[in-house]
Image (cartoon, rainbow, N blue to C red; front, side, top):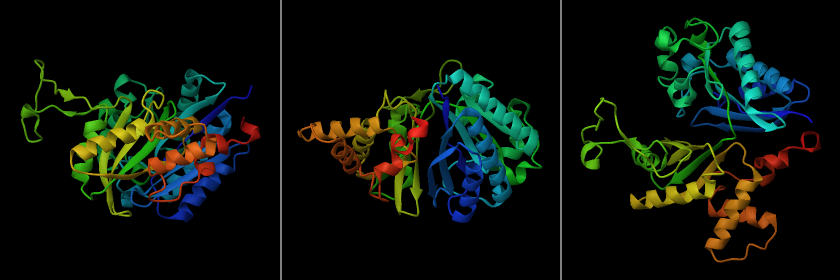
Length: 354
């Protein structure tokens, strides 16, 4: 049976569609690869690209996309709301069919080693592909972002997993983080405020990591530490959720921006409801939400059924109506139109990939 993996590289360009098109054109030169989605963001200055194919096809296409991005994006002049370390900020590989995570890790390592050897771009492996436990967490790997990379590369503790430990080439390209990971949903909830500070407070309320524990549970209180001097944290409400708050000038609103790393355990509709609850407790209203990239159909069906039951309506309706209920209930179409056939991964996988 045919092995399939998905690749979701995030490129640090979301405004120049000509540059984005050249990158996706390079990806599509690999026969057998299917481009599923291209999702640019002006304020974040970042484009999330999704494609699928057999393992060798995918890593060949990823290499060409990363190569083209390194030629077109100059990180010394790049700016945007989203954290990033390079022209290709991250490049995760995700098992889709007939392949185990352990094998996907091997392909991630092959891709990284080729990027370092042939392109001279330094980088790090994270999640299941990580070389050390400390490097599993992307936030840790990306700490300091591009601006801190010159110092980071020469720190023995942060010697790159691939590519040269120097800033010469990386001055333009930055670094790249490559992973093997499970399916992840990038999801933003819109707030009726422009305050990034308030959005961040809500993000701390809901994210699994929570916030630093302080005396008196107030933001300006002294940091609480254990007997060994380690900072203590107060966990947030939702497991498998990473979150930050930011202001998006393009829409003139603040968002709670999240990565949902296990939607079976913490479904998207539960995340929407919890953010709404925490926002309301702070005197803020949720107005809608935004999906970045793709989503499994099951996640929208589960959400639609949840909201139909909440409204005491029948769930014995066509799938299309259930999905429409999910879209409207979570306001997925508030900022831009939401077309299920363009966003649900199963709709985009034609017969060649089933």
